[in-house]
Length: 199
Image 1 (cartoon, helix red, strand yellow):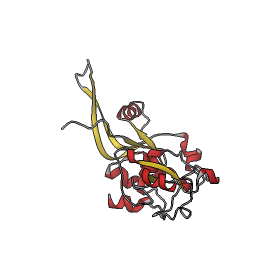
Image 2: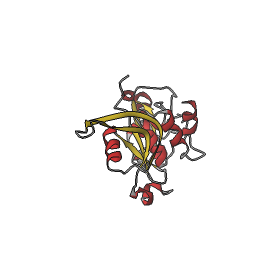
Image 3: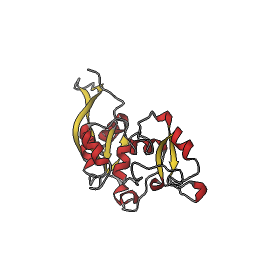
Image 4: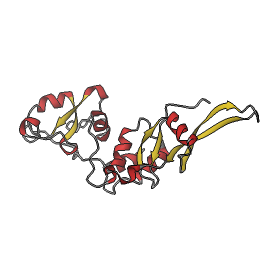
């Protein structure tokens, strides 16, 4: 059975704090350079190299779904409580479950838009706690009004994700063992916990 080489590897720092997703090429490079301090999770794939002319043996590297490497990120800002991850439509839509937070219906990515709860025209900010996923129909209807002014009700409160939550939101295909690892780093009050538990 061929390996799915598009599957991302979850990279953490030495303390086990999630850093980001890396490709299998980057993971193999970390193994080759001796940067992998430890690994956990399932073996995703075995990458085979060339044949040693002296021994006749083929080199190979087993790549796990989660690897820890030395990193300066242990002391960087993104592990501090006041860290704010970058805001993008892709991560926003995943945060809100690909669902319009006004009409509560799920949509394809192309049918969604970013809505400012307090409109920019009313001094609303482009921040995680002031933006929600909205279908284009609801966004157009709301226009430059607040939900109260437009007589619309939000089905959930927008929130700023922690770095671990942000890493989860950026994952293209998060495996069960990676999901469990990331969940352990979510705050106890994280709205994403229920969704991960359903997964």
